[in-house]
Length: 412
Image 1 (tube, helix red, strand yellow):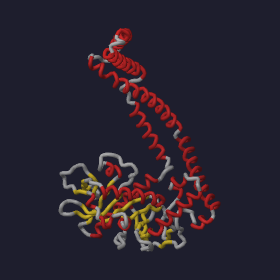
Image 2: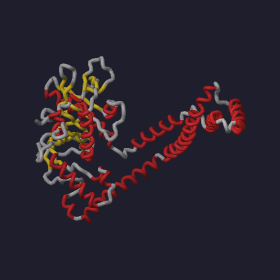
Image 3: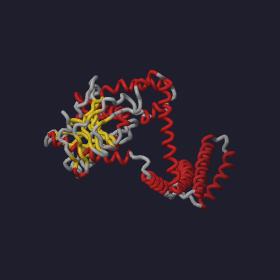
Image 4: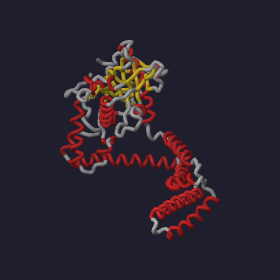
């Protein structure tokens, strides 16, 4: 079934779906600007990789030059603040370690750290040093004096630290605000378009999913789960699982447990598809194999999103929401659709779905034979499972890509 069949236009975003897009038969397997014939000549392959590396370096230098030129004052202020923050952090960490060691002594003697207290502590420390000599043969008393001395020294050190820094300083907040403001100004330079395009893609993507769900019937709904929602399932960050579910279509069961039918991923660029495949694999493995519960509530735009309110008409997503016959490791990609943004209105697509410039792990490898092996593996393992949906939107619109488990694929 072609889910895009009933989509005609999205008026509120001024986008239009164009029918009958043709796929250029000359489109290349594998990486952008890469021809499989390159694998037959290691010298040409090396030149191709070096060219991509050089272009990346040039691009970064141009970005750095513009940032330094436009935001010179902000960079200077941020560096100065960082020095102050690091200075404070160094002494504050030392203060914390010393006050922790001397806390027992302060509580036992009901003392606060101040000028008068420190004078008394220094005198007691001096007296204790003399007592130690007298009690050399009394191990218990000797050890007690040594312990007291260590605590007194820690209290004195903690107090000295308070003379260097203000413990109530809000330097971290000041630094983070300055840093956030700096990044906002960097974004305003329009050096990186991913965030801007990504937001637009997610908006139009959700609108498309709502039309898809509506065309399927009145009992089909759209949900969205951000990566932060996934991490909170176990109340901790899951390393290596930086992936969200941009959209999914589901039905509601009588017992309020939902059933996920298809997952959709929205991307402003098709360049990162392979790393994305790996991430969503990890995510689905986690969701299917772990006990968890996420409650969803309908938002104002009629998309269901996670909520902490469990009493107000919420529905539940658990690992049982994923049909193992659909979402197991063998055929799960038949139920995952990727929606990619395109900048130019066109009726012919020359689509290269892999790119070395976005695959840093390969880009950083100098061993050309290993690079060759990795490239072959990615082409062989992923290319034959790509199927194009030949419907496309206009400026910053979408093209749908379905990854299947089939050995052979074709345009739909």
